[in-house]
Image (cartoon, rainbow, N blue to C red):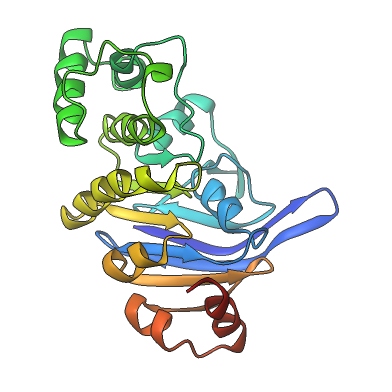
Amino acid sequence: MIEATNIVKRFGSVEVLHGVNLAVSSGEVVCIIGPSGSGKSTLLRCINYLEQANDGRIKVNDELVGLTEKDGRLVPMHDRVLCRQRADIGMVFQSFNLFAHKTVLDNLILAPMKVRKLSRADAAAAAEKLLGQVGLAGQGSRYPVQLSGGQQQRVAIARALAMHPKVLLFDEPTSALDPELVGEVLDVMKRLAAGGMTMVVVTHELGFAREVADRVVFMDDGQIVEQGPARELLANPKEPRTAEFLSKVL
């Protein structure tokens, strides 16, 4: 479902991704862990073309993301086509990124109406069902400021699901939450994983990774140091750097 090949990303003179390769199968849940500044979030943003890699290619569902071939070379695709692609690659951010001036319902229906061309009535009906699925039935008329952080993040997940994505990317979705609110967001993510959603999750929640992930990827200094089955890697890492990191966070 996702194939990232030799991804290099620089910000100015600083190279933050050094030829990263990652493949994710359909229905697989992959958790990416590692210290701050290791390139985890940058890799996620490259998959969604929120950041354009300086080198390498990314395919989602066997389609190049953000680029198209023209006269034998790769060039950025038209924004309209990119928007269609992004509709298939849902993204849930650390800081929710909800529109504060819009109600919960309006946050959910905006993209389906603009990109998928759904009618307001159809988009609203689908949104109400999604709010029920994330435990927020009847909350559509409220504004983000009236919700807790955990509720806002569940709205953000519902908003991503409203586009019927093929893949969901989570960028540390619980790190901005108070500890008592983390569980309600992780419960929603667990249900999505159980339902077969392809998910790539940048997270510090190692308990979640152990329980839900099919595979854990450990990144450090802009590269993948080690990856393997979640329980196996977390219990018995083979690389010294992975073991060092886990000894400090487990």
